[in-house]
Picture 1 (cartoon, rainbow, N blue to C red):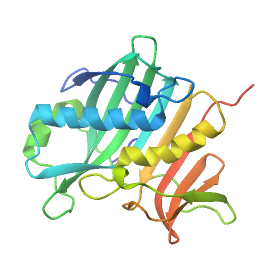
Picture 2: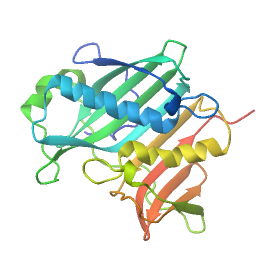
Picture 3: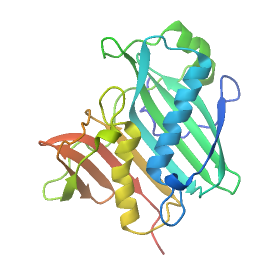
Length: 247
């Protein structure tokens, strides 16, 4: 039976492919307090996933689009901290796979993440079934664990929830003319910086329900831990961000 994707943070597998890379937290990746921003973390996750795929030389005329991501910040990395990123596969479905990534810093920074990625045929733009070369590369790490493509966050905001205008820039577009998945996290970052608290203990989730375009007038709608990006009464993105209560 398939399980919901990107809701568990499974440990590094004892066997199978694990790809390791390093990053240094740069000036453009931190907020005024010096902590690594959540949208920058999303960029790191995207980059190391791409590096893994390039290193494995698997894909051909295929690409991967992220559908859901969970990020847990145990201790926020800070400026100039050197990070080790370890990424591996923890599950699969017909045309999708779950990827786990662990970020550990030489100053104690620690972030855990899981994402659901869908394989796309770049010619047709449609999901493409996972092939033998996928399983030959990542199958051992994932084992027999299968994940569904079902999403889990509420897809529509409640009536009367607070909202503010939101617009993405052309600089946020990727090669498919969609807003890049990491750029969507800027909406989460906007809310996080608004309360002035550290990201320590943060758990944040983003689900991509429809493609976002640059220049489209949207509303960032908020209700408690949840938020949505809505355009013309259609939900584009659903999010949730929670932190331990202040005592």
